[in-house]
Length: 62
Image (cartoon, rainbow, N blue to C red; front, side, top):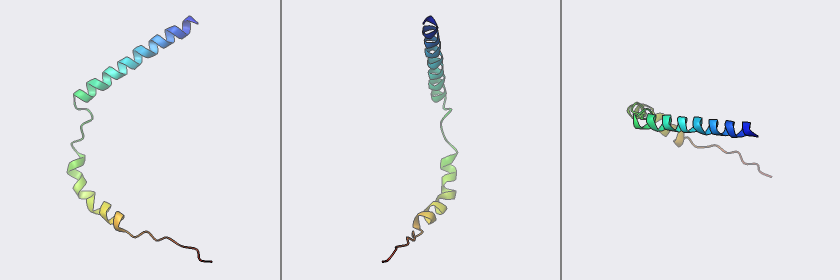
C-alpha cells in the first residue's frame, strides 16, 4: 500500500514539473505563431474555391 503513496507523490511532482515547464514556455513565447499569418494570404484563394464548389448530391427517385 505504501508503494501507491510513493508513486502518487512522484506522479504529482512530475505533473507539477511539466506544468511549470509549460507555463515557462508560454511566457517565453514558445507557442506564438508569427509565420502562419504571413503565409495565410497565399492559400486563402484555394480555401475560398473549395468552399464555393457546389456539392453534388444524388437523389434516389422511386
